[in-house]
Amino acid sequence: MNRLTDRHAVVTGAASGIGWEIARLFHTEGAAVTLLDSDAKGVHACAAELGERAFATSADVTDEVSLERSLDAAVRVFGPPRVCVNSAGVSTFGPITRLGLREWRRVVDVCLTGVFLSVKHQARRMTGGGSIVNIASLTARQPAEGFAAYCAAKAGVEMLTKVAAMELGATGIRVNALAPGLVPTPLSETLTQPPLRGGIVAATPLGRMGEPADIAPAALFLASDESSWITGDLLMVDGGAHTRGYPDVTESLQKAQRRRRR
Ligand SMILES: NC(=O)c1ccc[n+]([C@@H]2O[C@H](COP(=O)([O-])OP(=O)(O)OC[C@H]3O[C@@H](n4cnc5c(N)ncnc54)[C@H](O)[C@@H]3O)[C@@H](O)[C@H]2O)c1
Figure 1 (tube, rainbow, N blue to C red):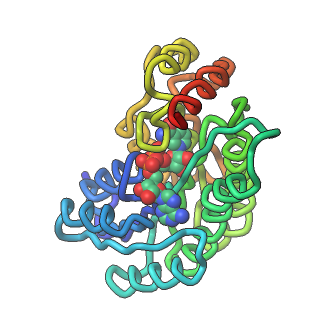
Figure 2: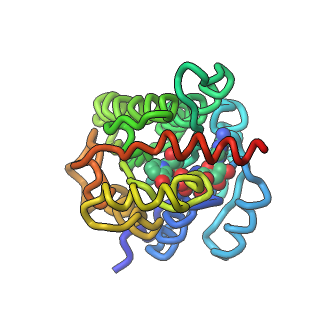
């Protein structure tokens, strides 16, 4: 049985990686899917691949006006959303003493403020209740040297999720987060190539990196009625990596950065 039949699902960051895999799975499960992304060309191509019951809209999740415009357009097409997944994200590498303020703000803006704005404007439009799933990260709980902005933003997403769950429970909206471990996508490109890849795999009890297809079913569980009494939680989907420490990738990443600058 399809678990999202006749439900309108909005997925941000849907043009690539984890967001795209979630959009595809939700579509297979019967949802009408709004794919939202700042990559206009990419998001239209993805929606075209899904065919009917798919609507593409381009918006920057850090821009409240553009985000509201896109969500209003989505409501006009498919009605109030019952499910929203917030997957739009960016990352950066840089030890704190060398991390520029502009770079810090870019990551915190997209990864944390973008989720705040998304939850705010999605919840206002989820008039029939439903489920919001925020994509956090293993690094919401596990510190990783060189990733201060990303870790801080993702830890913020966990707490934002809990507060949103408290505030929105009475309106029938559940809010949960997923914490993926390392998954090869454009965002994680440097970490998932050799030589860093080996250290990451060694720090993962299940002995491999994840795939977007490992993450999407967990998002489906949190989006569907199967999780109807779960809210305010963060589900680790990381091959058990949270049981160990984040491997020291600083030296290798700095070398890779220097090579790229040359
Ligand atoms: N890949 C991993 O290892 C990993 C691990 C843990 C968590 N995550 C999280 O999963 C989510 C998806 O990441 P991914 O790995 O699929 O990356 P990705 O780069 O494949 O996809 C990210 C998508 O977000 C979009 N995006 C970026 N900034 C945006 C903005 N301001 N407004 C709208 N869209 C924007 C991009 O265009 C892209 O399509 C992110 O929140 C990321 O932090 C990824």
